[in-house]
Image 1 (tube, rainbow, N blue to C red):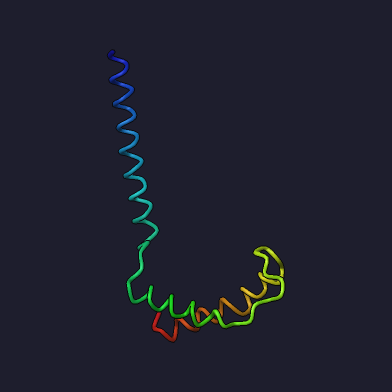
Image 2: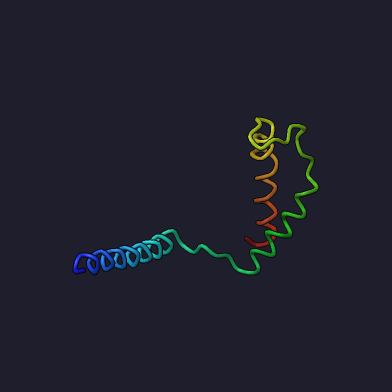
Amino acid sequence: MKHHIKIILLIAISLGLTGCMEAAIDFWNGPGFSSAARDKASHECFEELESLPEPENKSRGSKEMQEWLIKVYTPASVECMKRKGF
């Protein structure tokens, strides 16, 4: 019976320390949330960028899609967010 209590206590301490570690990692990595204004600007930019012509090969890992993302979509997205003040 004594060993069961020790095992339960060890599990409880481990879970508590895991939660503290997650909080420390979140604190270290910076704010993981965005403001309502940033979310709104991001949504507006997403809608605006939907009109961009996409490559013929739309499969996720294709070379054409990767090049399109790097050369067209990402710069346009960054520029849109700059216009919105972010």
